[in-house]
Length: 402
Image 1 (cartoon, helix red, strand yellow):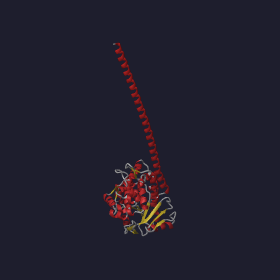
Image 2 (tube, one colour):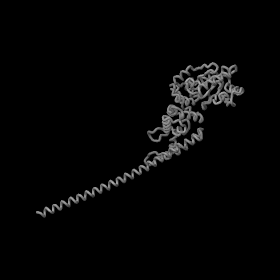
Image 3 (spheres, helix red, strand yellow):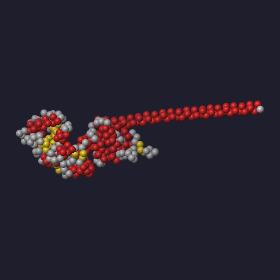
Image 4 (tube, helix red, strand yellow):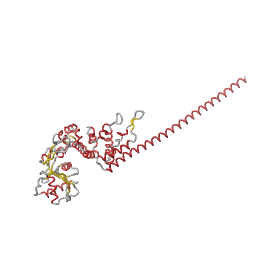
């Protein structure tokens, strides 16, 4: 979405809300305001309504007044709705009520949600850079933490409340924190980073679907070393699933890196080469996963991993489908990993054949050299024999002359 389209949407909301009960209660919030200040492309428009159940009721009001192209998608439990305006049918817009949250169940990251003031809505958000509100009526930007604009301009990520409480309540914020830092190249505030590391065990309660979504954004985003790399370093990635745990704990040979770090290194290499293709990055990340199931030790004590790419392709394809990724994408990743195995085996076969030919050539050369040496020795013996015969004849002739 262009910045021009974004402002046209806000102007449209201001126009249609004038003189209604929504007048002065609508705010652009979060990522769109952050990206506007950054001068970055705006991907999503979120509108906060500081009235009880404002998100759902505003969406229904828009529908009744024929401002929408279709029925909005309502999430009544959270007081939010997704909709498309007739004026801007290509843009999906989310409208939300300002809310307060209370986390009472430590085994879940889903809070109890109630209507709240705009201040309560601000401070329940994840990071200060996402706590800015632009009044649709006046155009004023509200920075209620006093740090939002500063942190955007300085490139700092911190939480609006105590970071230990923030990450303990919703550990997905750990993943989002690392992803934002990598995406924008920002620094994580020291206190926030300390709390993030201390709270990493809370990632165990994050759902498979949310893990999958955040993993994809990190793997396919910028600065993979600063997102997935840091997450693996602090021991967080192992909470994604059992396979990730095994990858983080398995070292092929003493002195090697764990298989998980090898996968991250492979993706970082692709990133350095400018490869953004999702299939290639997934195949690089899971390229050695088959080593978990194919390890054998030969007679010399060396670990071998026969046909690990074939097994690894099957494992990766199954895992990606389990993570909810597109079936075709999973199949393509499987084919790439297995294809690399075929290429490797073909190269190994060619190398063995080349070594065999070179060995045969060396043997032929050695045999030829031995034959030449024998022939040379034979000629030398004959020459020596002839010399001695000549000497004997001369000696005999001398004696006869005397």
